[in-house]
Image 1 (cartoon, one colour):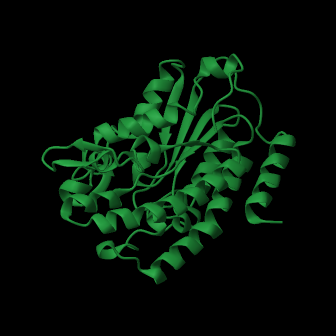
Image 2: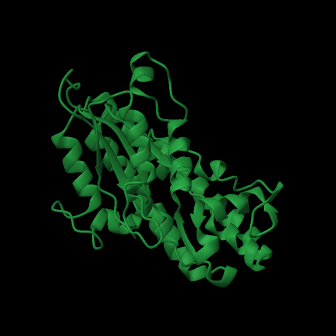
Image 3: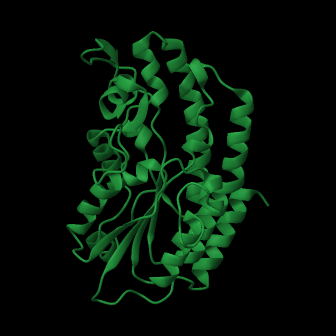
Length: 286
């Protein structure tokens, strides 16, 4: 049985056994649990963690429909899939981010309405030096991702059961910024690398019952329609959005700007149902 298929079986069993705990009562707080790397805690260039990230913006939109919804951010800047499982970067009383998430989900069974996740980019961070590909780095990073991501999604589903809506995201492509510094070939070469990475994550997330926000699509990662993007002149739309929605073109920092975080939140809102939609039985989009 393949790894992705195996994870689907585990998830189905967990839901079928009713491991989600009791349904939330009509009073008291409910929770949105945000997990992942630096994007999940709103890191911006020169500012560190902020309250302007996509999870904050997504929470604000969801809270407008459910005033009892509280945001809990357990993400860790620099987190890889390995450190999310084993710890080593951020400190958690439970030991690691996944263990902290499991503890929270179990302690608040039936009250966690949403779980979001972005993880994996740091597994292969630094594997595209100077626009080339460090093959050894890529093999190690992909190996970690393949071994760890299915464990992460399975453990979250087992701990949270069927009550929460689970959603994850694919990644935008900061490599497109090479276009404005004379590296058009490097920018083009980055596209299939990011596509392969995103495709693997997408499959794992869907197998585990996660909805997937198409952030790379929102950032127009494949759109080469020429637009004007001062001060860079005429560039492809995907390049213009990377320059406007991240700090990559200006100072080599791939974190999102406030505008970029809003676009990520908007991508999540397309697949995460509001409270009113859920209660009316309106299905979300995978």
